[in-house]
Image (cartoon, rainbow, N blue to C red; front, side, top):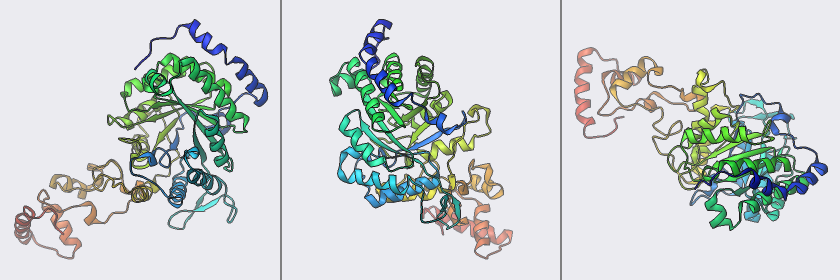
Length: 441
């Protein structure tokens, strides 16, 4: 649970031992420049880090083949995600090979065609997007070595080094004191930089249950050691939106050297709040959001890419959103969702927001009447926004709750134009059958 506040003297003593290391790193490699500074990103632009291939694959029972991981990575590039969390190379030679292939093939400009052109699924030319390719590593030298070997072939490689920062994790999982954890984090970030990696994200596992003062302290240390982004992880899905917003604010206001450094947020869905928490973090100043396709991931999953992105797109003109936007090509969301569901063997629940089978389908007569007059009466998004093409029969389902308007529209589509009396008779017969059979065709 939360630790108490850290006294200034204790904070200074913890950092004293790592100062020579930080100074040595700074002399050898120069002061770190954030990825936002390097790319000159607008302050209201929100980067999307997709972790489908790493945290998503940690869903119980999910195992992507190398070819499946490569295909998903290519789809994510078409979506124009900013960062692909490609995997955890230290876990196995096969995982390392998959991450390396993604770095070589998705994280580099294609040379077999016009340098900056690609093809979408319809064969239409579109600007080629080359995302950052990220490899996960514990704050352990062998992990960092493995990550760098796999991702170094990418045009924009990144190492994401993490360590737990909550009291319960440090005590029971790591068996380390806060001072030891801080020193390890700074040392491993400096080591990653010494390998030649200039984009290093530090992730504080279980940030949501960490002492905010210690979180600021460890972020200061890793920034001085060379980190270009720092990640706040609600690893167990514990926080409420107001709490994660407060934590992001605390980090941005209480961490020396944070100016220009990207603050990232990684939320789990154990209490069903991952999407809300992720949006709250963005509104509080997080400028990288970590999500997965269909929300897959450990336990109850992660914040869902499609929910976070489409929420921002839907409310883009609302002052509440503060002008925040992403670079996602949303027309590729639905095909990518379907591919991930197929490869993972995890069916998307029908009432899942954005990509569920029922997301743009209506059976209630009151709703159908409104939809047939103007789809905006009951749909705040268009299916075409996510690349979903529907027939009339697919978005208007005839059942016992349907009304005459929907039945008449379907009959007209089938070539039957009935007068009022005939329609009334057919409607009565339809209702009788509808109470016995769920869906009418």
